[in-house]
Structures are given as structure tokens and as C-alpha cells.
Image (tube, rainbow, N blue to C red; front, top):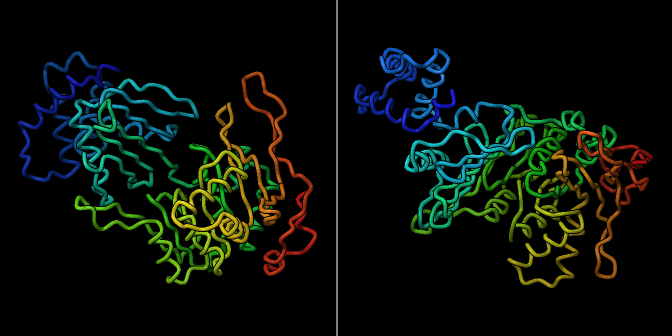
Length: 416
């Protein structure tokens, strides 16, 4: 059955099929599938194949015309979370947290290039030698990153981060032991009370998934604006939702719409909350200013190794686009962000909440954080699973204005 993925066999059958088809005519999917079946099942040279192998071959050829070619079965497999194409001959997949080589390959470099252009074209993106790096998305919301030669030395490179058809809820994350039920309840109250929350973590730690889960706590009568480089969030509990996405410049270098442009525009759209999928640069200043100008309850994410490290990175982002004294930047950050959450991917590949901290303010030029939860490791099981849980520090919230305004009872702000 593995031989069915050989490029020579697929290419031979495709060429045979294309000689029979009128390529100027747009065939319906059902008719194309029927033609492929006739070619595969009736040809005498295919008698050495079993019925199951022929069926797989039919799907493989059909996907090369209408789907994502060799990638389609991987996209249809719910256990696969990431697809890494290093070249048309080299594909790796992540399944259940483990990365392994995939035996299939594209029939040619040109076929991979065609798939890439089809993907980016559907979301009005451009990728070529002049602009060889692009972020895009698939119809199901999966995140796509493309890097072309001469930047990618092996050939066209594409990475697809898949997202579940049904977004994970906080209950799902609790069931997966990403955090405790107690911490989940506490975060729900913070979201309802409109605390500004920033989620930090490394690559693949689950920031977007966690942001999506937190958004499920937003009251359905609010107006939400989401801003992303490539739209990934799947917010389904808020009817009054506007989704905005950045746009790359065209081949003439015109028409670019940046995160900063979208954040500024969103302030004129009467949002109750603004959700910025991920901040990476100067747009951090605009996000902080939005949080400081009446858009309480806003959410965002960023790459960092800890809550404290995230603050340093935010400083760098803000100062890359504005000539401001560091003292002013720190005050902006301290007044805008109420809660910092840090996610980690542990050595057993599990994704956990490892810190929840409250931003207290700035004292003597340094941030003052109030740790509320910390992940405490308790060893390792025989099969290598990290044992431990997110534990309350016993500290109480210090910034209680929003808690009181939301009508939440005092005494329950303790997380002990």
C-alpha cells in the first residue's frame, strides 16, 4: 500500500487521465471522481493492486486535482496537529506531540509550488522571490507559513498548524490537566470583570488555543473586535463580532495593512473589548494604549519564557516603534495589563499553565508582580509523564476596582 504514494505511479496515472479529460471544461467533483475510478480500476496494468490499494490510489489522484494533493489525508487526520514540509520530497508530521517523518512526497517541486500559490491566493496573499515569506490560513482555520527559495535552501517550505474543528473550551483544557478547575473558575471571573489579560508562552505552547478558551467567558451581549496577522481565532459565543486581518503589500510595495493600522481603526468601531491574536512589534504600543483608554477586558498573546520575560519583550516591542523613555513605557505596561498568564510545553510534550500573575505596578523603576498560581512539579511517572499541578500561592488580588465594579463578592478574590 505504501507504494501507492510513489511519485512515478501517481504521475503516470494522472497523465493518462488528463489525456482523456477536456481540461477546458470544469468537471463537477462527482464526475471527476468517476473518471479517476474508471482509469484506476479498469486499466489492465493495475490488476496487481488490491481493491484497498486502488481505492487509496483513487483518493490520492483526486486530491491532486481538487484537494491539497499528498497533504489531504494528513489534513483529514484529526490526530495530526502539525505538518512540516521541508521540500517536495521531505515531509514531517506531529501526532500526539511526537514528530516523525512521513513516507509520502509530492510528485514534483512544481506541484508543491502550485499548492502553495493556491493556498495563499485564496486569502489574497502573495508569495514569490521578491516576497518569499508569507503567513496564510486554510478554510478550516489552520495556520500556514510559507518560505520560498532563495531563502529556503532545500526548496519551497511550508508549515501547517492545524486547529480542531471544534475549538477547545476551558473545560476541555481542565480535562487535559492544562490547569485546575479552581484556576479555571478564577480566570472566568477575571474575564467577566474585564481584567486586561496577556498570555505568554513559547512556540507551540498553546497560546492561541488558550486565548480562544478564555474568550468563551466573554458575555454574549458585548461587541468584540479581533485583530490577527492570519485569522485563527474561533470565537463562537459572541454574536457581535468583527474579525480583522492584516494584509501584505502587493508586488509594487503598496496596499499593506499592518496590525497598528487595524488596532487604530478598531478604536473607532465601538468595541467593548479588543482581542489581538499576537503582538510581535511596534503594535504593542497601540494595544497598550487601547487597554488604557476604556477598552477593559482586552486580551492578547506574545512569545516569552516567563511572565517577567514577557514584560521585557513588550518594552522592546514598544520602544522599537516609539522614542519613549523606559520609565514611561513601563508605566504604560503596568497600567494597561492586569493579569499575565504563562504557558509552557513540558518535556513530556504536555501543555500546561505554569504561572498566573497579577500586575501590581512599578516601584523604584521595577515591575511588581503578585504571583497567584504557580505550577509545582512533583516528579515523573514511569512512562515519562511530568507529575504536578497548578497550585494557588495563597496571595489575594490587590487591584480590586474591576472586581468590585463587576459585582463580584469580596472574599472570593482569594485564590488560596
